[in-house]
Length: 343
Image (cartoon, rainbow, N blue to C red; front, side, top):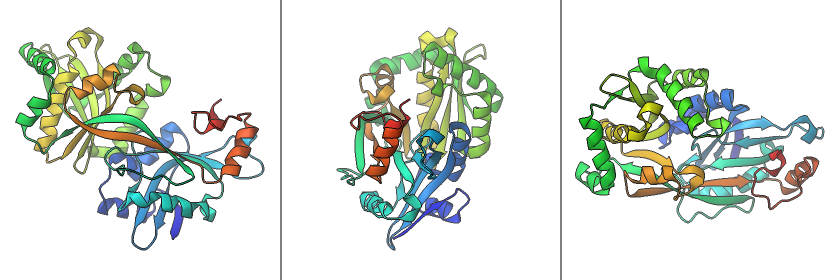
């Protein structure tokens, strides 16, 4: 099998994406952007067994000096989002991993944390011996090929009532009016602060500016304006092929009680359908929990579910254990992965 570490500039990366269904998170532009803001170097493992090709995008991270031992050791993690793998046959991914165990380009790779894409995770997946497959729970998506009548039946009655109230009070949605982008950034970070979110969910103006520059017209801005023309809520959406992703969202404090995001998501599913898209992915709840308020909010829009899972991959068990011991982490059953980065 052909196996190689490739960069985002390698033509095989874009060539494979041009022929297979994928999402924005697998694109070389997004991976390069993520490397700048999350750390590491944007890379992918490319594989070809003659009938099936594999692309595993990730951020390559050099291990700290205290965990090295004269070797150029590194590990990898999927960029923020659902990059997963791109392949004609993801069911063959375990066999691909076993081939990677023997290949020189992976000999110094200590671990790989892979976030699967909910739309492209195989049913009844059988992981490789070097892989721990973890099911984190359900995500919500809208089937845009269904009729609007079908949507209404799936939409929670209280949600429909709240949307009608927002319309009566003069709230309305505008798309891609980028003069409101600075307001989105302010409202988003204000929302994360109000929710006491982890610092990793706070994004700077530069992050947002670089994101727009990186993915271009695949990024969309949706804003809910009040009757006075104030931005009451705003969100970013990705459009890649026939998939629309709900990415980042915020609500202005003075409009919080009315939850104008309800009107925005209802508008975007109509907008995406008119553009010929097939699925609108709303994502899951906090920590993958179906009991979290965030999941319950999203589930009010649709009865359709997908599965979000991750793979924790250790190609060379002895190497992983050596690095864990250098880090002073000896509990191999610890849920934190990779355990040597726990501190």
